[in-house]
Image (tube, rainbow, N blue to C red; front, side, top):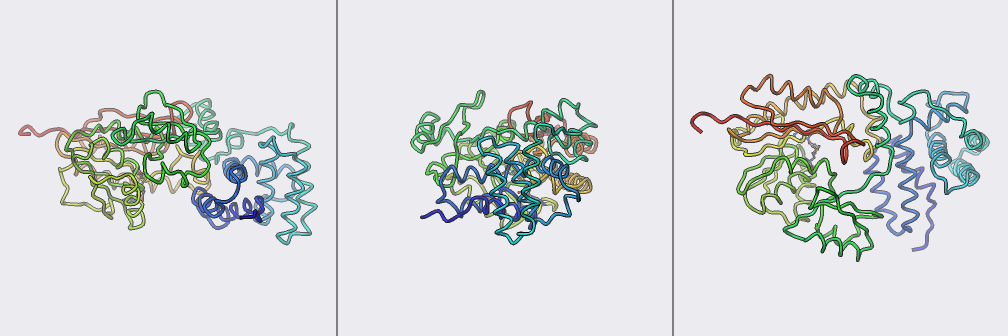
Length: 431
Ligand SMILES: C[S@@+](CC[C@H](N)C(=O)[O-])C[C@H]1O[C@@H](n2cnc3c(N)ncnc32)[C@H](O)[C@@H]1O
């Protein structure tokens, strides 16, 4: 198909979808890449890089823009603001594009979108940024790493400035892309060979014999190996849940918040077709996602259903050998994958998440059979949702003991920021 698409228009529309209409960035971007599958790999990579980069660095970009304008950034028209943000991102972080080209394209775009009268303004701001970029300095960690100030303040209560810098830098750096496969279904060497035939380079991950890093991924959906479910995209940190759980042959595992199915699939594969994973999530839509992934992965020792984990299910009390509570959380460990999370979160939102987590944990504990395991996990870095929930749990459940807990710090530990706590329910004397 002839390329009649202007990449910068696609970028602008995607940005507006996210910033104005509130669409999640990864969903908006996936939709756009699905729609423009026929574009050259290079163009798709450009669109992805500018959208993700602009979102990741938006606080910094807005700060830079505000140095060169005489009004508050939020007084700018959304289209003009997005044109400036994406333009400043390219000027500061994409060396391959001449600054003059960035300015010219931005001016053209403003004109095309009906802002003829603002062409000079856009041109002036971008040319000034280009001219003075070496002189820009950042007033604090929040601006330097594009983190909302309240998040930095919250982390300052638990982490050193150096640790926050390491996390901030991790979220802005390019991350390796990890996948996990089932060695019972495909050998590692065989998968590496298949991927190579699909022009995907892979790299082994020390300590993870059933996982690989993939490089030069463009559009995962078109890989035959992916369509056939020969691997599942999973971050290293998330793989730890299955590794901690270590299900034994015949175990009954309960995954209370299971969509889209990553941990359930891992557990099911570790069970080697024996036992059962009872996987739930709160809506039909979410449960369909689980079903789709199970089908693709050729998994059949999983039972799936819609169930609100805030409610008590009398039928599974004391039944679970392993109960997984991989709960909804603030997601502060995955800001690299979902850069818009940080702009939607609020301090009040965090408080209600802790309440939700405790509500679910109150039921989760009841499903663990005496001697069984409960694994609580989140993909966040927030003591209130993590370590403090664990302390609260232990204070209120003397029949459980903490076997281990770990806060995985992004940039220090491998993979995303993630928290795990493993509890064991004590056995009754007669057991
Ligand atoms: C961190 S994600 C789970 C990821 C999943 N364990 C995996 O590995 O693919 C949290 C999930 O909790 C679900 N959830 C939120 N509130 C819930 C509730 N009240 N009951 C059950 N699931 C809920 C969300 O729909 C979301 O899919």
